[in-house]
Image 1 (cartoon, rainbow, N blue to C red):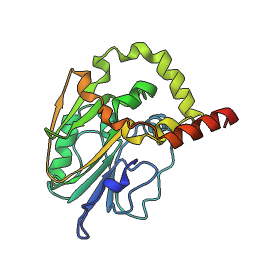
Image 2: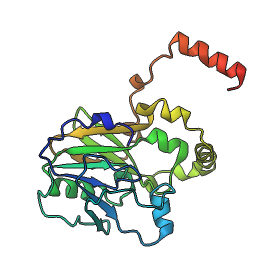
Image 3: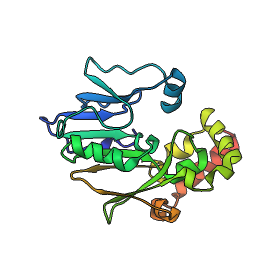
Length: 223
């Protein structure tokens, strides 16, 4: 999760479900939902190379097959779902399940198309972007684009990420990831317009003079 500070409206009495907590479960989560992986190889791929389960602190962990969640309607008050929805086959059904088992409150986070443009993780099936004005989550399946033609380029950048060159994304998170809290259900729709998935250029602030100066110094020192 890149924006934990955006989770602000969980109430003390809320029963919170976290879907796909990865290596760092949110401390406020009361229960967890995990995909039931067929093999360790699939588990490694979906979890970004992490095989061992995190410490769930004896809180209940439920497993599902990627379709209907194993919960009753309205069983939870709030759902945390960070970097999961881009993995699922049908985002519309997935979001419908989130709304079914909750009160329509929660937090959603995912990589943006800019991140996929660099690294193209093959377990990420969709490009995603939330239209805040129209309260609509839009997605485009990678398989419906010509994105695979750039595989040799994304493979190069993916190797750089594996070698620790994550500075660009780490220092400009808003350009590469998106997270938002919601207090009621919102729309979700498929789009064929890739331009609708690109973040706003307003998120690219001019680099301050002092930062430019130190960048030049570090370049000269080859640090």
